[in-house]
Image (cartoon, rainbow, N blue to C red; front, side, top):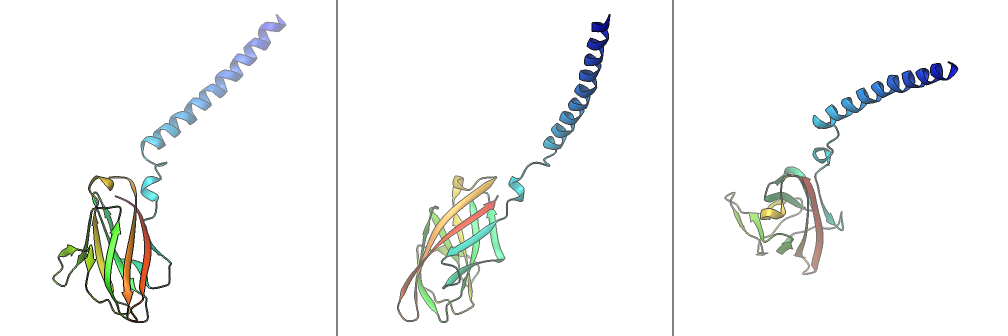
Amino acid sequence: MFMGKRGQAAMEFLMTYGWAILVVLAAVGILAYLGVFDMEDRVPSRCELNPTGQGLDCQTDPYFVVDEGTVTFTVINGNPGVVEEFSISGDCEGLYYRNETGGFVNATTVDFELGRGETQVFRADCGEDISVGSNDLSFTIEYVDENGQPHSNRGRISGVA
């Protein structure tokens, strides 16, 4: 008779906590379904050129967009003088810069000048390399400063399309 009461107490204990665990699992499942735990959309988009603070830098405003298939970013000249003879290469096949009329022109080798503090918008057409979700793109910008010295900046863009 004593064994039956102990078994009943153990069974009541398991049933009580079993229902509580089931409710918690259901709540976590509902939150996961609603996307509360989806961190992919919360990953910050960023554009960085190394070495930073020397020469060219990425500027997040007004243009820094990662779309499905393309990345558009702005480069600002932090050099004390004019830079020229740009060349840009990277993970993507199509690299373009925005010209005076607002259209994009092939940027494999670019012959324009960029004064101190001036910006230039570039676009990379990456096709299937940039898809919905988190993306990472590497590129290199080479240029010549006003003293004729060549420079090279390696860049990386991370963002969610």
